Amino acid sequence: MIAFIPFSFFMIFFFLNFKKKKSLLVVSNLVFLFYALCALLCLFVLKIDYPNYKLSFKGVSVFTGTLILFLIPFYIVKDNDIKIKIDKNKIISFSVFFATIGMISALYFSQYIFNVFNANIAANRRAMVLGYASLINPGFFNTLMGAFGAFYHISFILFFVLLSFKIGNFYLRLALFLSTLSEPFHVFAYYGRDGVFTWLVCFLFCYVVFFKYLSKKQIKLINLVFFSLSFIFLFLVMIISYYRFGENILDMFWSIVKYFGQSLYNYDISYSLFNKFHFLNYGKTSFPLLYDILGIDRTIAFDNDVSSTFLWSGEIPWVFGTFLKSWLFEFGVFGTIFIGLCIALFFKKNIKGSINIDSLLLLFLYYIFLMQGWFYFRMSTNQYNLMILGSIFFFYVLRFSKIIIKND
Image 1 (cartoon, rainbow, N blue to C red):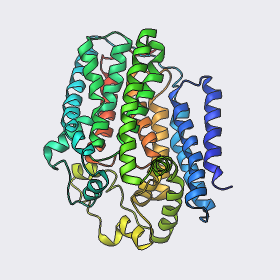
Image 2: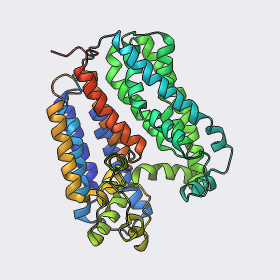
Image 3: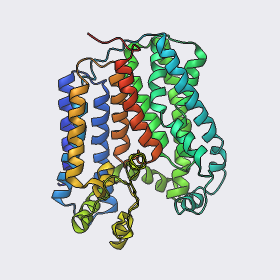
Image 4: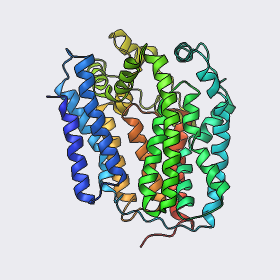
């Protein structure tokens, strides 16, 4: 019965949000429903893979309550009242910049994709994780390309803005769309799958937001492109899943189910270890860029190493357990709750009334954080730390510039 707690509360939140906003086609419903469905998959994973494991009531309660705290901003904002008002001429230069850096990143990482699928995926992935070998040589240029690609979400919004309001020419819109591919290409280059998931949920976000601005002809074209690319991407994901996690089709299918349904079990394990060892890294792993900017040493001593703690206890540290698991040994339970409260207050203060493109950018960033966050805190590299800081910076640039026309 304890395992039903997350699913039950997420569904309650979904119905309350639906009742409040009187619409099913809002992005907050995507988030709540996604969390509810993943929590449901957790029940199957627990039943089949861990039938003798007993979840702790305290661990599940902390898991559910803290996630609901982080979901509150999407309940607060009026994402059923989105009104995009912009200066069409000034948005062009903004679009050219992000189309350019995104295209450069997408082209750079695309050169590695053929080699990824033309080799032993499982062995190469293990070698890369252990630090023995990688298709991509680490260095400043690779880091720069990753940083360029980290702003794929802005390209997504600009593409839909230009398409919806018939701004710019065909080639600029095409460049913006292709620049969004920097994310899945980047992840494929490292034998990963979550870049496809991120791209798909980002597409759905923009589709839901801009649906009312699109013509029937544009909707048909978008649907064709979306389903075509989705088929290709999912096929590639199935190949990676097959070679990394299974010896047959059933194993491959179960690896995908477990991909979405393992977080509750893994968090509960982590929570029990946290209560046993009690140490914090204070964001050294999650926010390395801030430490580097401030010039603070972020070395983690061996006896405080999270991985060592797991391995000493016979558990695997590099498994999904939501961003809460990622932050458990960074900020602790109360530190994570404090961050959640700060985010909720920030949204309440800064996103009021109708949502224009400035608020939409910030809402999109938070949406990505939550959707990826069901698995782990994925924005923990310098590139994605830059994505967070850059998005907040551009939020204020848009808010106080003349690019947008303020809603009444």
